[in-house]
Image (cartoon, rainbow, N blue to C red; front, side):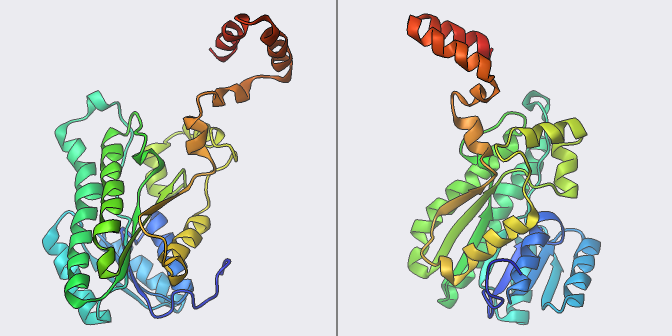
Length: 295
């Protein structure tokens, strides 16, 4: 069950886009275990039905509908169905995404659009669809956006994703101010590496890449889906009702590892540190020694 009471989300209906597989499904399962009614949206009908069967076997209330977040009409039809089924939703989790690694100069405009249309446009379209309905009905709600640690810094080889997630981050912070007057709260999670079958095949397609990705994390491991699900459950609960516009990073310290100018000094041996200590007494030689040791 995790660290929270079983009825943490009782009475809430949560919609998770891209919720039939991967981290979206893991979060949805966590919400369900804490009493929420669940709606899952995604493009692949067979995956939605597989997820729905698993949820129902576990005794959870679930609704699924095929939806393409890139298509506003598809989102409108989904919202209508949820109004009829649940009387609306209380939480929107913008999780649907797409990404792959590639040198940017190899990308075509179509490849760029494949990521931006899902991540940025899809999140914006879903936010508008449900946000407008909440405002018109005079009801509040919570929107949880899944961004990434490089949304603020950028990252080579995933430029479309970095640009799209940066836009989602800006949307989160913008609406945290603009829509707070309507009782609509905005929060986001920036996950580090969390292995899933689909994403991992595209972002770490070889064992060597996967090992290298884990090795650069200070905790020396990747994340567990349950850890992300617990964080998401808290953020959409009433216990986090004063959190608005905040982005929570959960990455084992990976972002800080890359941000620190001298973090590569972790590779310096004790013997080399002894030598460096001696060199610090000789003034200018210290800088030269550091450069040689750190490459």
